[in-house]
Structure formats: structure tokens, C-alpha cells
Image (cartoon, rainbow, N blue to C red):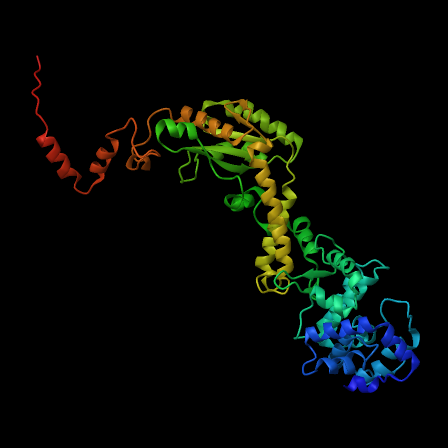
Length: 494
């Protein structure tokens, strides 16, 4: 109402009548949108129209709402709400009026929107200690925009104004930005595309971050930190020792949660012997295959029993692929390695940088939790990057280990085996198991106390009964009774 008292429209003039007649549809839509947002509490629809939309024109309703708030937060004695409206200064409403003319052929009348408040109050924002970081963020992000990126600059100014005013009645969503910047319906799709560009975290020129929780936007940096891209780069290139593990041991910590890493069951062997055996897949580096092969195979399973291994060699270049193939054809042809199948990529893997970035993100979350931990200032941005790297890793490992993709060559006992389908890999597993375990299953296998898939014991008709009797708590007494009652035979020796 104070603003309405300062801005006086001559409603009897011919110019005002022409404006309200020509742009009646636009002004009515603005009234509806403002009423829907409901941040002018206590105003009826007619009061919104008369006091806010018509009464404060050409000040946009969001600028009407934000002007008292920003003035209260940062205004100096000589720069206030009233000087913004009345004084001829850089960025002021008065100067806007002096420079703006009405074009009746346009789709809407000229409006002083919320982004223009930044131009007037920017110096005050810089001088206040509590808002200095907001000014620094603005200046930093502005350098990412191209010189002629007008919409990017307007969006950045709007979001920065809202950071100062900290509105409690709405979040800075796509719809709020469209409304605040006076984006017309026919411009909506183009503006949404521009928002996507400005918030694309894969681009180093992005200035916004979209929070997944509520769809709101915020500047893509904190006033006290570098960009997350820059931190990742520095960790990888300048301080890799902070990451701790090498990439292969780090990958093993993620291995069980990745697709295609489950053991390959020896199905045919299991059908023949009634016992489940399989080959466990483990990632290994070329260094491990070359220099630590005995360590990989001398204690298979490291205390957890494994029947055999498929060593997936993470070759990073063509020379490593050739070296791995030579080891598979020669060293691993020895019978002492009969429990080991080697899987070698046909093309070099682009995995190293991805794993380092994944590891750097985990480091930042743990060691800079106030920024990147759950509830931290930049957690949402961290999560977007983390989800993206996880998705890339899942896709890369899944495609690498899927036999149908034919990305790996499988060697066993010095020979290359042509594997094109998962069932062929299972046949290879059965072949390995028949070589390693050619005799009957171990007595302790759980198969001996449960039915097979058909509910019977096939060729071992008495096996279950005997096993259950022997494992019963009264086994000794039962055995004594049964043997005592059995027919006795006299064996004569000559």
C-alpha cells in the first residue's frame, strides 16, 4: 500500500485507458496468477487488481512483494525503498520509467521485474557482511555466462534477490521464475529449455542447481567453496593420495552391488552330482595378474569357500590386453590354475577416470560433510553427481560382464573359449568343476538333507533317510536298535 501510494496512475488519461484496454487479457491473467500464489495475505482478488496489479503498475507484483524485503535487509540511509522508486539513480524504478515507452503492438506492457531490483541494491548487498557472500557468488557465477546471455543474467539476478529476501511463502521453482520474470505463455517452453541449460551440472558454465526434493533452484556455488567439479579435479590430479585405495581395490568394495557380478553356476555339474558349484567373478588389475597371481589363487575365497574364479582383468590399453592374453595362454595353462578362468576385455576399458571421480565424491561426502553430507548445504548437488557416476558405473560393468555383449574373451587352461551367451558361460563353469571336482559331492553339502526339484532323491533312494537318522539327536540309540534287530550272519573263514 505504501508503494501504491507512491506510484500514481492517471486513470482518466487517454494513455491509461489505451493501456488497460489493449492489455486487459494480460493484466487479468496476472491478477489470477498473483491470487493463486497467495503471497499477498489478506488481499481480496479485487484488492490485488486495484492495489497491486493496476495500482503499482509498471512494478511487477513480485517486485512489489520483494522491494520492501530487500530494502529492509540491505538498504542504507540514503538508499531505501523510496529512493529506489523516486530517485534518478542507476537501476532505480524512476530511471526505468524515464527510459521506457509503451508499445501497444507488443504482447504485453513493459514491467519492472524483480531481477531489476538487483541492479539498484547490488552495492548495498556487497557492503553488508551478512549478504557479502551472496554478492560474491553472483559475481563468480556471472563469469560463466556469455556476454549476450540476457536470460541467464536475469535468472541469476532473480535467484540472488530471493537469496537476500529469503521468502518464506514460496520456493524458487520453475513456475515462480516464469511468473517473476514475466515470461509469457508462448515463451514458456523456450524458457524451460533455457533453465535446463543453466542448471545442467554436466556443464562447467551452469549457474543453477535444481533440488530434486522440491524442484526449487539455487545458485550452483556456495560463497565459501569451489565448484564440486574443481574439487574433484584437484583430488584426482593434485592430491590422489587422499583417496586412499587404488582403483581396483576400491571397485571391489562396490562389486557386489553391481549388475552381472553374481557367481556363474555350473548348472550341468549340479544336475549330475546334485550339488551346487559356481565360479566367483573378481576384478583384478593387470599388475595383479602379472606380479601377484599366486596371491590371487593361493587362498581362493580368503576364508570363504569358493569353488573357482573368473578373473576379470581391467585392461586400460591395448598393450595390457596383449600381455593378459599371453599370460592366459602360457602361465595359466598350468594345471595348478585349473580353478581359474581369465576374462580379458576385447577393447581397452575407459574405467579408471570414472572410478577416480566416484571415489572423489565419496571422499568429499565423508571429509566435507557440512557441505556434501546429508543435510549439508550442497548435498543435493553432490547427490546429482553421485547418482550420475553410479549410473555410468552400473552400465559399464553390466555391459562388460554380460556374455551376450561379447566384450570379454574367456581363457581356461591356456585355451580361448567362445562365449556368446550366459548358458555357454555356465557350461564352461561345469567343465571347470568336472575337472576340479570329478568325484561325488561332500557329505556335508545341504543337498543331502533336502529333496531335489522333483520331490524325490532319484538314484539315492535311501540317502535322505540315512542322513536324517545319523544327524538326529538319538542317532546312536536308533542305530543300535536297527542293527541289533537286523538278521545275523555267520561268516566262516577257512
